[in-house]
Image (tube, rainbow, N blue to C red; front, top):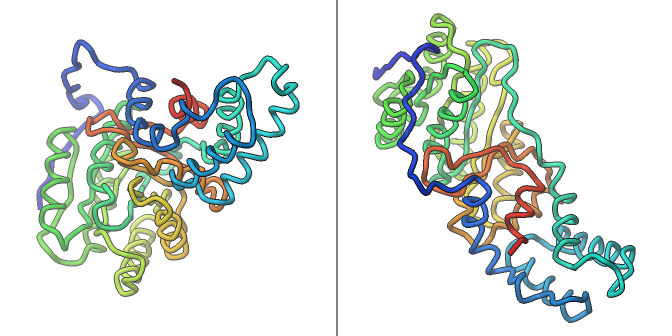
Length: 321
């Protein structure tokens, strides 16, 4: 077992802040550059909205993996707003109207993570291999510490030694406890972690799990077992089930969400690596077809580059020049 104890009175030391550090809006805007370039918004609109620009926008949104349903709704909404504002004679410009239409479409996803009164409050994280679960847990631990919550990490990925070691590094970095075992049953790790958190008065348990494809049915059954064991260790837990999705997967994110939701009852999404993809439009597809709360988005490698999703903030970063 590898174990550090962190107390509320001994918060994790802050990382050095570069003198020229960017604001979150600047980071988000920079991170969405590839998606913005893929959509080509700076080239689509001049001073009017016509069929040519709408066709170009439709192709661009589909290319950014916004999906047919979301693209159709955005175009219809944009036409309606343009007409309501008086068309070319009106005061609004097309990009501003599209920004408002996109923000309204994404609004149902905006539901920040709330740590309830239960102690320990258990958050289970799942996803496919390489989605960024372990890194997201480390960043989420830092975020929760900033909210004055004490945190314990459960290294439930017992199949990949590197995952356990990676989580331990995050434990050291954030000065939080890590409960881990070499091999063995991941459900047993979860049970031990919940019990340890209760005895130490820890606020939040972040439970890592091994990456798996939705088609690996025996591994999906194991995830269900892990969830059942957590519930035995702490009635009512896990209180949140977060699915970590890699923004690079585009429309495949929808099938992953459907499969993991069916198995676990996903309560929220963490969407990572938006800075490395031109497929950020998948957020619109999720909002239209399966609006599970998007708790956090990630646009960088920094420890603070995982933040709560805000619809209007995202739309502005994507569509403003």
